[in-house]
Length: 392
Image (cartoon, rainbow, N blue to C red; front, side, top):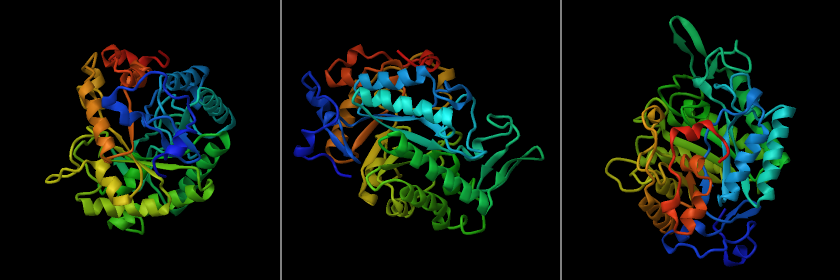
């Protein structure tokens, strides 16, 4: 998928901006070809868990939440993580499912609301892997699932997946992607980051297997490659598959699945060949070099290694980089306008193609419009209270 041509620009799905675009951020507000559609701009809403779907079913408020972000000018929405149809897929209360009639009907209503506003949306398909513990819905008796067993206080809390388990999870992702296309979503994202299941196979610390799915880097990538191939076969050729990956984990910011650019290529190139259309590169600070001794960011390196479009993300427009525990310690986070200008410059020089924005969209769904119109001073800063509400 390439960026939009002048001819494509004229047929962009969303209504063009009525106001002149602030020149400093103009690259962020160019159209972009995405599967069957043209995104109105390069601003993406990052996936953020909201825990507002009782019983795994998106509510009317969830529908309004996504609609509101499109009204605020976001070109592409990526939903919060939504778990596939496998007993160990979920790890948290009140997060949405992506299976079952009620949950899928809720998602259908989300899609219809977003499309009615001229926006585009993809679900983030999710299996939490070793993060799950027994006691969590929907079946409290089910332990975690991962590449290797984990024992805590003499109790096996994570089950080592056998071949049947691997096949079942792959089938669940493929079915979820097929359901996403059937419901009218504009693509699907596979969550392969942050210490969840796909990433568990990548990382040596959580993958201690000695079979074809463990040991060498090529073996640790095998599960993800097989999963991507199955998803690719389950959807149309022009239905984009986005793959999110990270080096860091929720409990280990220094973790790395690749120690060098060469190792990163051995992970990402097979995924691109298997059918990934876009890589979503999750970093804590999108502007930092990927490896010591180099100056390329992880997003820029991914783009160069794979030749695929890239979504960059990581503390966009905030004075504080992402930190899982930070919400307990800070009430508000300063907006840093200069970073938005710098991100636009990085996009213009080809470091990445799309820019994902997270927390500030929770407090101010009109962030994109305000940035576009040079009204950054009016942006409502993110604070902890933003986590407790959906619609602003």
